[in-house]
Image (tube, rainbow, N blue to C red; front, side):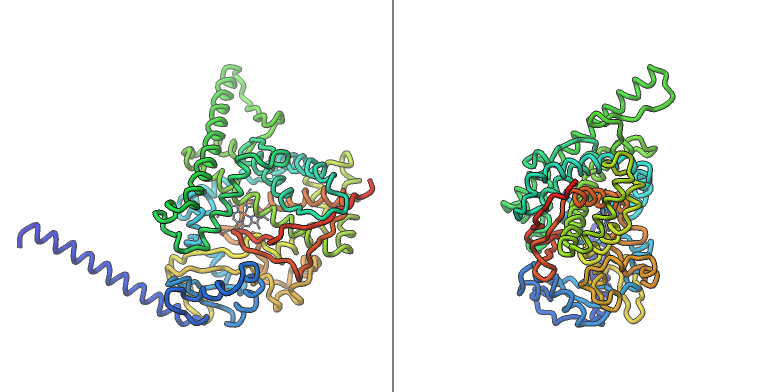
Amino acid sequence: MYPLQETLLSIIIVIIVYFIFEWITRDRKIRIINKIPGPIRVPILGTIYKPLLFPREELFKRAKVDIREYGPILKTWLGSTPVVHLFEPKDIELILNNSVQITKSWLYDTARPWLGDGLLTSTGQKWFTHRKLITPTFHFTILENFMEIFVEKSKLLVGNLQNKANQEVFDLYPYITHCTLDIICETAMGVEINAMNNPKNEYVKNVSDITKATFDRLMKPWLKSDFIYYNTNQGKRYKKYLSNLHGFTTKVIKGRKEKLITKSKTDQSNESTSSEPDVIGGKVRKAFLDLLLESSINLTDMELREEVDTFMFEGHDTTTAGTCWSLFLLGNHPDIQEEVFREITTVFEESNDGETLTINDLGKLKMLERCVKEALRLFPSVPVIGRKLTTDVKLENYLLPADCTINLEIFITHHDKNIYPDPEKFDPDRFLPENIKNRHPYAYIPFSAGPRNCIGQKFAMFEEKTILAYILKHYKVTAIESQETVKPMMELILRPKNGLLVKLEPRKS
Ligand code: HEM
């Protein structure tokens, strides 16, 4: 045989072997998955005909019933892709508490153009190294410094709400969004965008637009291909948001880097050994970005941008939703709100100047904390998380094959009547220590759990409690919608379809 023929033959054999292997492994995966119960699959659509039959806002209410129809595990088909849904705490633990199963599913792909391989979306060694690097930036003492920002922005928010506190019905949701955006911009990047006073700010608008566009693309599988998507008007708009957002973060990183170099030169010329903290917005503070720039591992500009963008994405929509659902529930339960109000008043009275809370003060707001936790149970900001299995996982009665997409159904677990009797009832006492101790540790996972849990959970709890304490100290909140009429809607995070409609009444000072 001639060398050329030999080479061609080898290539053909390699290709054939590859396809046979693909076919066998796919076949194995499908054979195993088919043993898992689930609704009837139709060609092309798979099982997504059900979601197509109902409006999006009804899906959550239906999901609670539908998913349970099939037992403790369920399989669905998104077109030709199988997805296994888990909601039993012991099954969820097997996935989340496994240091091998840390790869996110394709559900996260639509966020990748914006977030790249940041902490939320990356896997393997890159995720491990970055998680180790970023973890100290969420240390208690650093969060203590951020407390000043939480307080300052909460006071501003309370001031801005003054002209709304006249029994008029209005949507509080955008006010909270702008407050949390101001907080995350200052804590993550060290810049003040002042969204509360300037909601038309381009960066603010782009963050909101790109979040909506990302979810919209996820809901339209025919836009999965980049070629098709970027040729649609929607895709072209998306590209514009992306370029603006990346441009903004890149500019901030460049500015902070230059500042750091100038500072180090000044320090050297002053022969100073102690490093002076930076000044942000006229005050002495360090942002996450500064801490990353000062760390021993040199991240590239691209890696820095990915991490900052990830904080921006994960760090404001989630806390906005959490804060708003807490207000919604307290606004529906005036008796519980009064109890929280009394607790807040006492803690403010005992605080340093009667109006500025510290992290220690937040620790005394036990009832408020239970309300925030219960709100995150009933309405978890992140209702589902996805994984792609890298190896087989054996559950008690089923095998989950490698390469399988898994949805961990936090929302469904949190509404399980066997775990939470009368599950729709807002009952903060479920989080009294004596009631927690009898529950499975994976029965309550709003911040996920295991090695890939939410790195920002303490930040989130401090931030939410601060904003809530200030609002509730100054205003009595009445919610307009009830738990029966409100429409929770999945849009990357779980939010009320009509926003947070409330009436505010000033509290007598
Ligand atoms: C109420 C507020 C929040 C909730 C409910 C929440 C929930 C979650 C959940 C469920 C995950 C796991 C996602 C997954 O496995 O796919 C996660 C991851 C993450 N969260 Fe949060 N989060 C909140 C606030 C924050 C804040 C304030 C920040 C940053 C300042 C943050 C940063 C992150 C990051 C970087 C990850 C990825 C961690 C990793 O994979 O190593 N989150 N969050």
